[in-house]
Length: 147
Image 1: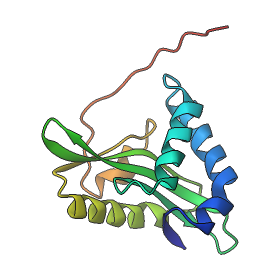
Image 2 (image 1 turned 135 degrees about the horizontal axis):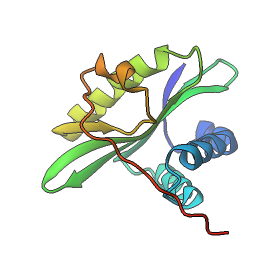
Image 3 (image 1 turned 180 degrees about the horizontal axis):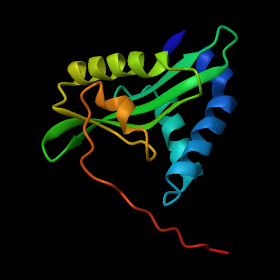
């Protein structure tokens, strides 16, 4: 089942599993940012019912999360842009990406967005190219140990 998560019983039931999944993605793919702070802020936006913020989930019938996307509509320089900050699909959960793309297109249309961007880890751009995304830049990160 594919769900656009909202503040309610399902979100509360999935809180810990979702938090851990989002946190692990942040730690692995965006180590330059404070993962706990970001995930906490995202979940706060979800629980406050922020209409510009969306978490999309692809789950098994037993509520095991197989894929997720974190999507936000933002105003930047006078334009509305849809940013997908996280998109992750477990092995074998290929249906999630196609449906997420449709949902993101719908979010963009509802918001009157002119563009959409998708942050992803290296080497996965081919999967999104079939939906009209193009690679425009590579973002490199250097992390300094604080220990």
